[in-house]
Image (cartoon, rainbow, N blue to C red; front, side, top):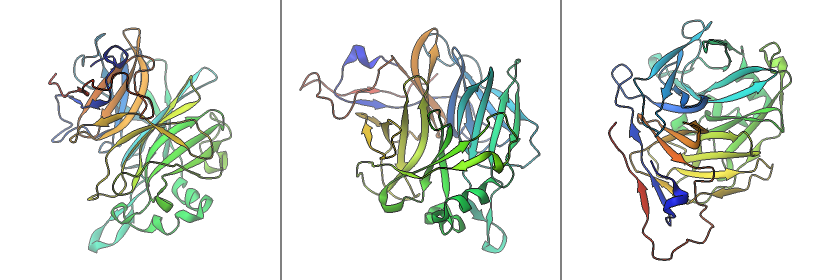
Length: 335
């Protein structure tokens, strides 16, 4: 873990620090992260549908103790599957976490396609940090009606370009949840669907929603098509961080990190970072660790990384500070 502002490299290569523990038999597929308090973060695992996990860090950014399972109270068993991203919203003294599932179809019996249990959760963070969750009935059908261009893709599997949501962020200017699609990628431009929430504390039904015009993000060409793999709203900056990566499995496109100012034009500015080949970054957030500001990135392959500083990432368009300075890598380190 390093402070880019002090190192001043040409480029930053980011690898993850393994969690050092398994979720049952496999790695934690960390796919979204939010700050809970100083040095405390929550992430979702797309293989766990009834709980989030707390990652506590020491003041120097090391993992402090085992991950803590935080049950999503109030959900019926099997109510939702494949949760992919989440966003924190504070309103009227309340703190909410909104969580989206991928909304994908999957192979069922006899090779038939079925819609995985899906939805958007509104989770209230209670005073004791327990989590009370509600799922919105019928959201997937509402979304397809609201954005008819999704109708065809909603009937096929993600490996064939079917509907697959992997990003979620809160847009305070639009008072909307922004859904970032991994697929489809119309005309090679990742898609953001802004859905206005009329009343954050109101009935958690589709009547409380209003669809806004879709936004097409302009990403740089990098191999095969890229889709949204993670989305984060910079809470005090009126901007967003967007992680992109290969849209369809078995294709080739690197993970990239962009900044987006939220404008409808969808113009992005790429950061001059690259991710280690084994890393699958799918969640990013800014928070405090021991009173110091840092970015925390979580890895779908079972790890995390910390990047210190308020403005700790170089832009690809910025002139390198030293024409012959070597690249610097943030490397994988065992806990």
